[in-house]
Image (tube, rainbow, N blue to C red; front, side):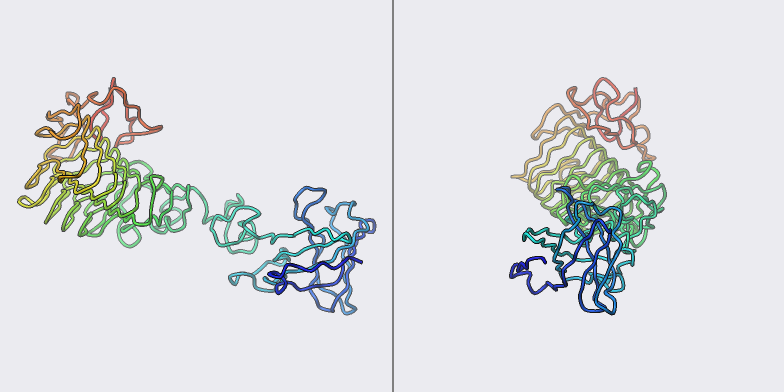
Length: 458
């Protein structure tokens, strides 16, 4: 019979020893002894050096304490005559009628749960891992159980039968899969893409949205004109869990938000990417009518900021305090900070470093710095921009010419055909792969890139 081998001390308490198991590959049967009513099962991991989980059999010992099972066809003849001692770890239940980890039920056809060792007569040990251990595959929902086991025992659904739990699908649609944006964000995983159909989204679950640190993309299906977050006096997004540039918001209109700081977006430690969005009619009671960044390195690209207001302080549209944000190809028009005490009608930099490229600032108002204001010690660099009244600070290649918007009184801030902002950007500029303007059109269409959120066609 098989020689006995003691288990490591840290595992000894979790081991329940059963009798020896004899494999007869010629007769294609397995026989073992033990106490009547004892669960019995046999798995083998690794056949001829190839890792594989092979079920030999499972059942309950009969009244005589013996159990025989016809081997499955997958059992290799090379096992003939082998004698194994079976040790079952009792840290988890092992049969289908017993609850498993986290109260889940193991289905009858999945009759093994836990790990054990087979020790042959030469004292060679084969470690059998828990077949539901996430170490053996993917655990997309991070519950400590292999995805295939979650699907098999009903913990997760797999309606499209792709082998991936539905809650871990990389592609999610709102409202088809989830009615609210926050529900989708809660269930999505890193690398996922949430696509939101056209419509107006408001109320609980569609404001104060939190990525929870996940690196995923939340995007509208057809751009900001048709996909509106009606914030109705609340804020739109809160980034405060260490989000990175891989946390992306793309293609929404955020309107009528309100908060003490950052009427539509509040960034603190989180450094997301926000692109191709329209911020309109948002209010900060203090500062940052549309967006407030504290110690963040948020990236803003191809966005339009119009009619945002900082009631009592600074930054009619955007306020930056610390961090290293970047701002490129955005248009700021008709934003307002406090008319006496406010600084920076469009943008206020309190501290930190901010690089601004290819933007347009026109028709904004504040007590100091109608368009832009940077406090002493802060580093504001403005390059290849159109700034009403000009920009005398750090930077170069800036214009101070009326951008000739198509119909500003009716909030149409596209560039008219004669706009000086057309082809006025850096000739060496290369857009990111797939980058578009605020309307979803190609970012570079002429001899050089345009200034502002709109890229005029040829």
